[in-house]
Image (tube, rainbow, N blue to C red):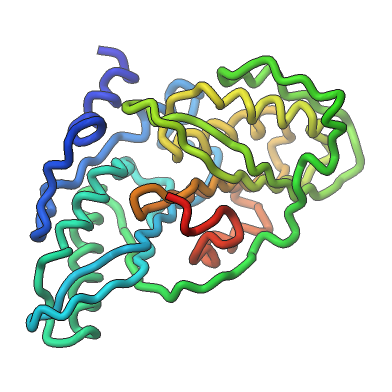
Length: 298
């Protein structure tokens, strides 16, 4: 069985099937997927990653009940390292979190949230064999990417021709330049679920500091080449990072964040950056996605 087929088989435990979850707490719903199965295709080695980073998830509709059946509802933020051996499959996480809906924890709201936080951190950390942070946050609207400029502002649309829709790094073109910082965003990223083949839309934020200049029209052509790719969000982020890493100088700063539209109450926000990256602290600021895509969009 190929690595791609093995990944799809693992992910298919819940994906593409009628939901079989419970509204009563059930940690056995969680499904983990080895990252290495996809990374090897792009020469990314788990023991020698060309990036640091994390995966940030938001569950906008987490709900549980206190012991007197009072419902509580909060935004749950999850975060774990890109160094982890496994990633969590999204539908399994959705079913797992939904299993708290009719379960009782604590005598009041504060106790309920604290107990749920501890349970979720323990379950996910055990399942993924890594430290997972869970926090309940307020629905703040913070634009942390104000420096990033729409890449289309640098392109003459009339001269841009998009012809390839399968990932092709040969589309990327560079030129020599003075040392310069680039803050770019592209709001039409699309890839597809590798199991259900349903489209996933997102915004991508790219920062790099280099004497090499990636021509913006070639970068747009490359990002559009994901339109018929079938990968998890985390995989797309790492693929894009690795392709840019390969054409830049090895000591250049590089930061990639792919912020996908939430679906079924959960969004996924992978972040990857070089060890010397000066804006790596952005990963700690991502609380909600007002700055990326409409938070009410399902």
